[in-house]
Length: 424
Image (cartoon, rainbow, N blue to C red; front, side, top):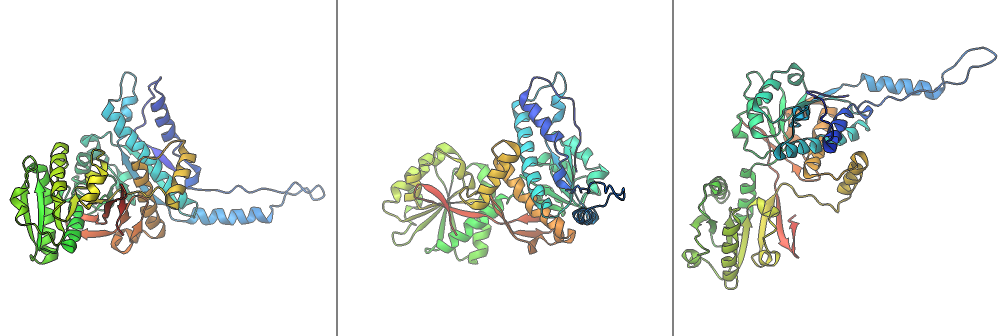
């Protein structure tokens, strides 16, 4: 059974919110604990007795087995903001977006548990509204129903997670950060699970590839000079030094108006020149990529970009291919795979809606952690022994002191035939 907490009265006249509340009210799904109903034979007119059929006895036996199974308790803490449904209250655009994320995540996670339930697992899921308010997250951290769960999922956003994890004594159960790639050092919680790889692991994957491709013992990092790029550069340099044992030099250049002349003398015409650009600034990228494209006519290039480039429509595919460009990604969904097609069909059938990226991530997380709970709670103590290939990414966890479990699996994508393709 799935119970809903912090439910408030519905504000009439809003169809979207009506759908939200109906979806939550429908949470107590019989699928989470299937019970078969037996049938009886008609009364024997001669004896006046009613005998159970063989099938009925078999159903009773199966029902007993299901009821005897252990129940895995899961607490979901999501930012529905249901207090905005009160008379006279309204959702802001930002609040409505967060509520939409919460609903999509809940649907995907529940669909995964329903799938596992069909295979004999048994769950009790309690749903709590964090309202995306740190004070509410702090209060929920004191809730005994949450503290006694086998797995706590959420809060979703960093401020709420920080308020939740800093409550004294709240370090006995594993807490899953479901959607945020924030560095786990932000929370300093050894019972945290960071499932979306933080930027550090994107930089590490880029460094692994760059070291492998670098033949001239130099890697060029082109930066716009904005401080937002510094963490990526720091992680990247550290990884290159470690992987190459400091035999490869990282040459950093702050590029102004596309001027690459300061590094031309250090480039080679005989092997690929590895360029790394950690910027996400559109105007900077347009000018710098144009300059690189001009140099590529004389100097072979391999370009490695920021993971957010995957979302940028202004990047030109033909230019990226000429630059032999790669990016890292932890969100690559193969919509042609049979597993994804099956998920999409089941999601549409269940909710009459298209699944978002949050629903897909929730489904993967529900399948992975739900299966571990169904098998044995102790498996949550050794996530590094249980790898998983999901629809959006794979899970390959590493345990780090004071940071908890971190998924370090990051894909490498290449611009090829005018689209991004995963590098095996």
